[in-house]
Length: 325
Figure: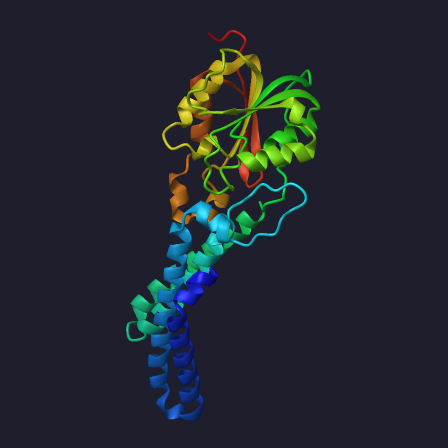
């Protein structure tokens, strides 16, 4: 970020100088206020260009390079490694869109209808992005995940698959909630919003939790695994399967194959709703609805046990019937 500010130093200098001129015109020559609006327009244009350039660079910069130059303090406890892009991206976007709204309001001063419509839409989008920033802020680098109170393993013991374990939030929560289980933590470890895909942080976190001996780490794709049929007593997946574009239903089918009859699956995802709208605005309309997920789950052959809301998302608990083929 500092590098981007330095590279666009001339823009900040011009914007600052023009804003000072605008203020001086208003104070010293109140009869010529219209000139100040021109200065403000020039300054606003420069600021917007600068912020868009910075934001674009922020989005396009490779994750590995960003992690090298970003000065992050070392955390003594759990570190689930959210990327700076993910944590601050919505806030930066909100500021850019808000300044764009101000610029539009000034630029279209002679067209009241266009001015009102464009300014209102951009302002609402800026507010929406800020709300998204607040929601994302609830899941920082150190916060643990809260699991819903469901009867996942009636016996309290067994082999559990954490499908999409990331940096270990769910794995740690599961072992702490059910001390008698053995868990297989499974992931492709290629997530762009977690440092190095999460593998190194995962190993560090389970070591801190003291559960290394009870966790087996496997790398692979949940849509096509090397696990045996009916291998796991339970499966948990938290905010992973909903990220699959065309593989959601295949992930459910593969989970059905590797889950034992009578075994249960706890699925935690983002579904279409107010929270999704707060993060993705109108793009949230393309997110799969809870009703559709229930239909897919039942069509796969599972039996729904319970569902609800948790962690700014939704959860579904369902089981593989004993008489399934």
